[in-house]
Amino acid sequence: MAHRQRAQVLARVEQAAEFCAAQMTAVFDLPVSLADALARLGSIGWTPHDIEQFPRRLRQTSAQDVEQAAVDLFTQGLRGGIVLAGV
Image (cartoon, rainbow, N blue to C red; front, side):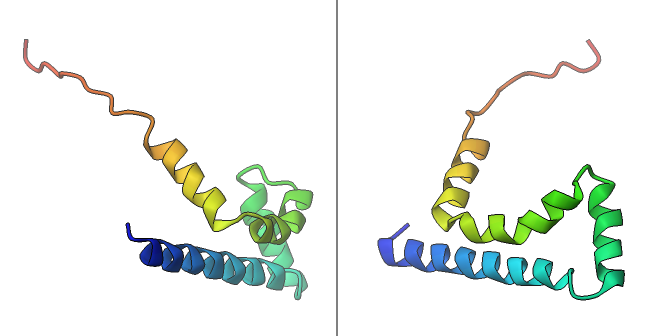
């Protein structure tokens, strides 16, 4: 990817993170929104502290951090194999 194109992509990731952080911050504006977030995110193991800290953590995570995490996650090496059916 060309340097300019990469810079544009990373800038868009930063913008998306800020949008998501702002959306998450809005959860605290209304009790009903907070209750919904506690119920939904609590059901997948998030604590109230996790929910409270999430907007800050989004803002602290750089686009380069996301890029590196994607590389680490998706380039673990291809695993090949053969499936024999009806043998």
